[in-house]
Length: 277
Image (cartoon, rainbow, N blue to C red; front, side, top):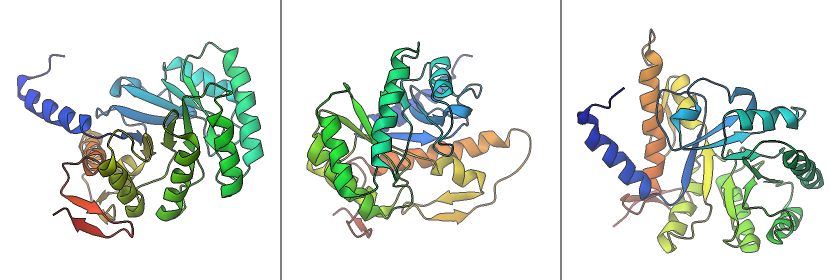
């Protein structure tokens, strides 16, 4: 299909905005009716038609909701969709298990045809063990290029920020840091904005994933700039998914915009929205 010329200015404006965002915002979901550079999908849903073609960079997750989901199936799913990254098994409350599980994951990965780069998950059971895991990967014994901080989905934004800062302190900037399913608390966004303002080449984290864009519209809700969701009944019917997809993309784009220096509003560390004057 030839892209109509009338889309050219829109595409240019969208790409310019994304280029200004120093943090990769991954959308967790399965809708293929909108284009977004960074997507994350669970291994058991990775074969959704059109999903791979809707993004540039794809992370296949190891199905956090099922700790017994076979690693072989995770690797096969990542290979089948030519994923860029594949997340190791996630045991957020068991630090020793997390390290051991990644070791087993790597052993299977090395014998598999999957080319996706493995991402180990740091357990956030407690800060002491968390620092120990960070030191393990800081030594680059497993030749790790990216690590994910897991288990913070239900944590307060201030707690999330504390773990990310601890990880950076130990890992430095030689290893990329991904926030796994951390959501969009105002405290977290404020800390990310602050780190970008200090040095846009060294943000607090390099990437994170959120499910809000697709989950909100699926539940007939829309998020505002403070990431509070409000009821917004959307039409039902043939191809209504295309309408919802537009809202999902716009929601992800709003977050990317809030993480650029061009955004005139910023979140303070206590979550207060303040004008940038």
